[in-house]
Length: 96
Image (cartoon, rainbow, N blue to C red; front, top):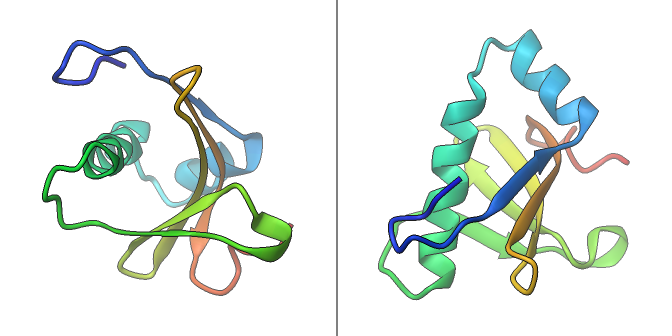
């Protein structure tokens, strides 16, 4: 995936995240668009996206909130990789 600045990022999905998308008929491209918004927010752009750093068992991950859906992702800025660990409905997504 290329960001508008020309920087390439690798986005990987865990098997359970892909299963959630398939079950709920949500295209991967929709999640990629959300991740691009999150990356722009991290770069300092004024983007309206609800993102928070997680603690405890999920330390090192970020939560992106879109309505009742949650995306749990790990952003590695050194290697320019995003790993989407889980996608689910609020409350259920935090169970490992």
